[in-house]
Image (cartoon, rainbow, N blue to C red):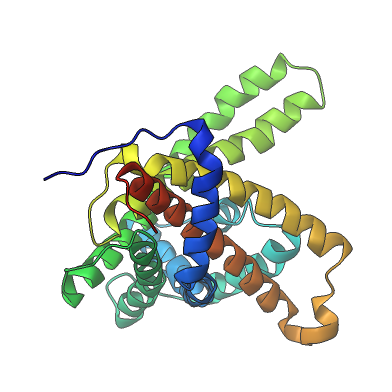
Length: 286
């Protein structure tokens, strides 16, 4: 006998949000956020090395600066600047080839970050993942491969956009024209990547497959809260935080880790929101 399906109205959203916060706390959301943040931090440099190796296999002159700038463009400047500096240093001195042991290790370690997200989102949906280890690891490796390819494709796609934005900006008074030509272009590309990436995580990473109609509320909530978190954390770093007094030379790394912790918590919260919506739709009590 199938369960009755309840339509979710705007009047239900306060209860759904309250249930989401309760689910996040009961499912050890903060602990999982720290696990995801640490895994992403450890996977950040291997992912860049893999992407550069992939770009090197496709081109003789990969533009590492554009890759770093695209991925870190929405990070708070106080965090992105030291990370970008270290990334450029590693990328300029390294010589990772796609088919060498170094390239394979970079691919594997980068996939650990994806696997941490998979575990967190699966628990948020309260799914049971029946897939064996080799299949989930292959999925995480595929995410890194596809992510690197999409990143390179977005850079290529972005080469043709500036001309169009320049034509539009010429007809708009300054300083708005320059703002549209520079900031809107980069934000549009990054926003598209974020939507595609978060949606892919919700559709393919959990143990059970969910339709796009079931996951889009959490995706939009995640993206919206991420932009708010970037703005709020930028203000916090500019006016209140003084990590150098506590962590000395590790200040940049610790600030990035705390930022990723916040980003991971929002990602899990978005999955919890979808889980709460699905359970309320199906008439299941938390």
